[in-house]
Amino acid sequence: MERVQVVTTHVHPGGVAAGGPFEIVDGDFDGTPVKQLRNTRTGEFAEILLAGKGGAVSGLALLSKANGELRTVQPHRTAQAGTVMAPFANRVKNGSYSFQGTTYHLNDGSSHAMHGLLPAELPCTASTIRPGAASVTLSHTFDGSNPGYPFAVAVDFCYTLDQDGFRIDVTARNVMEGSAAPFMCGWHPWFCVGDTASAVVQLDPRSSWNVCDHLGSIPGTHAAGYEDVVPTGTATPFDRFNGQPLGDNFWDDGFKSVSPAAKVGTLETKIVDTASGDAAVMWQDAQHRFIQIYTGQAAAGVVAVEPMSGSTDCFNNSDGLIVLQAGEEWSGSFGVKMATA
Image (cartoon, rainbow, N blue to C red):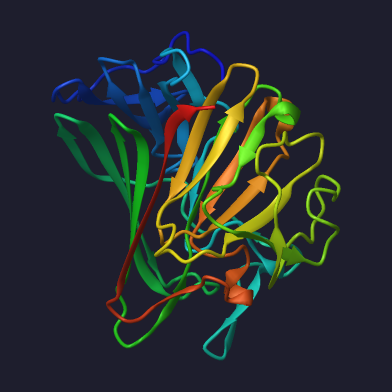
């Protein structure tokens, strides 16, 4: 994780709210509006895009536990923005699925549907500053007009920077009467690791893990860009990602915690930049028992470690699929904090 030199380039203050060391700044990035959550005492910040990739985290800097310096945890204003994903995350195989006896098509079937259906712009519906934190909420309601997802579900994403790090709290509510709706959510953060081959991703050692089976080759050995790494709904016990470097293997695989939430309520995956000695921890609550690991942007010095509420393609394989009954509300959380390597 590289040292941060300047963290507010091209952000023009407007609508700064005061409250202890925390503030919220309205800015723009090449014409795209952003909200930046700042800790003015430490220099830590989280930046959220409101348009283009609405809801994406376009920068995150936190204090290193190794030396107390400010570190870029997620890239600032690059192509690797950490998008939020709903009402599904990652892939839906061939863009189609069946729910309660009806088949729906998200595209023409020539490719997998990818990364959800959130629009390019997400409005900010709330902002809060407290002595120990700053938060903004971005919201969207799927109104049922999409024939591939004809369900009305309201979703709120609350982004918070506090003294412990950064978090996103997600709330989804079925606003239909008399109809259920399928739902899944996830986040696609990119962690700066310098040299990806020497970086370490350590799944929470308190939990046992499965790797999600798919129709492709053995996990970690398939070629970059392979199209059929879609889980089948079955899984195999997995004992790697316990301290060894990622190496040059290409990973685009899903993993499931198979220990009960009563035993390990909050899962913590450690991402270590071995050159700097910095480590970030991506944590996820009991509502998120799945992780996707992707190394397809290794040339940029990043690895994606993605918390998910269900397995990739759970709209078809049902592993972790959330079914929201009429009026039902669901909530879950995930986030990032720093740790020692």
